[in-house]
Length: 318
Ligand code: NDP
Image (cartoon, rainbow, N blue to C red):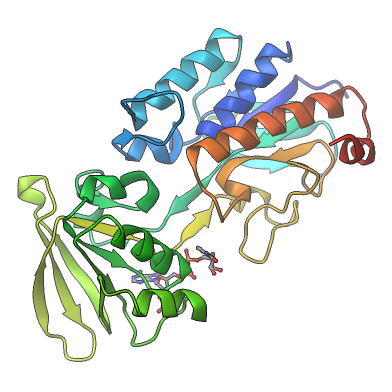
């Protein structure tokens, strides 16, 4: 059966848009479906200072708009919409959009990202980008010499706390239990850091102050006593894990033990012709620049697949 497309890309963060740029410049006329969170996680941040090429930094939404325009300029067809079904059982692969449209494609590049988990107390989301962040390497620099909190007790929370302790005046880790989930080595590093303090058995009741549009402190609830206390600080980093956006592909593609898409030989997945790039297959680095890098790799891998170069040969020449 002839496919509608040679390359179809799902996701419009740095990975998807970079894959689109490369596929478009290779004359593959890609289609990119943006998804519900167009632009991805960078649209939730403010100044991005660690994407190379912008010495004064660039606003996250502006960076994504530049990438989008660049991909479109070379001929990517960008489609708004959300995919509700993907059939990867045999090529051509078939995807269905929420509005009923269906597209078939010879290759599929999945760049659906991972979503940071939020506390879901309302005030945390409302102050996102205004003192509440889910990314220490993105936003830590704005809190130099200021008191901040990290929420969570896993490796991410410890890693963020240790990183932030180099910048902030003081880091308070707030965890809902009395012991950490993080690996022993990360625990030891965090517990022995003089700039890191811990509040145990506690959850965040409220991030203040939504009415002022900035973070001024936290209302913390002790889960054992119910006692509420206030902690004054300037920033809050939520590090309670990420959820990879793989629901569409469960049972069709191999996932790793954390639910991320398993890749090998670059961006190849367990289904030939299907490639994965960016945070949906990376739970370690999770940076815009690494996502863009794997987006580029996925487009090149798709191009070589379409040229009929077997994967084993690709692995040897890689
Ligand atoms: P984890 O799932 O390991 O930890 C999440 C933490 O957040 C837990 O302490 C959990 O509490 C807490 N939490 C979850 N939901 C809530 C909530 N609603 N309110 C308050 N607290 C909450 O996620 P991570 O992102 O830390 O790590 C993911 C994986 O990546 C792990 O396998 C980790 O080892 C790995 N990783 C490794 C790193 C390294 O080696 N350098 C760095 C970063 C991640 P509780 O403990 O009570 O469940």
